[in-house]
Length: 149
Image (cartoon, rainbow, N blue to C red):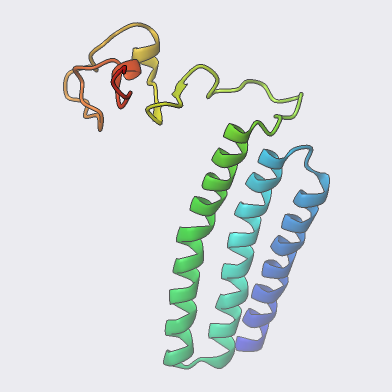
């Protein structure tokens, strides 16, 4: 029975890794490639690790598998986000079929802050009860900008 479970996990994990490889080859731009490969590869590696845990059936191996799976699940999406963000700010072009560029006009590069929809609409304060890292009293353009010399 354990062999059948291992086989299913290996086939499913390998299939997802294959989907990730296809995503690299078939998607039109960097951003869609990263989106497809990060999701498929993270889950695929998790299934392959689960197959190893079931195959060996030892607590030491299972503990290491769980630690590795948690590490991959936490770091792969963050790494993809940071790579995508860096590519966006370096000017890597979006695919012409992209519906919209949601960051255009919303990011203050000097302050490294992203404007909310309320700030874009001209409201200087956030709605009551909403927290913000920058503080509710200053508009986004004034956050973190160096003083004029």
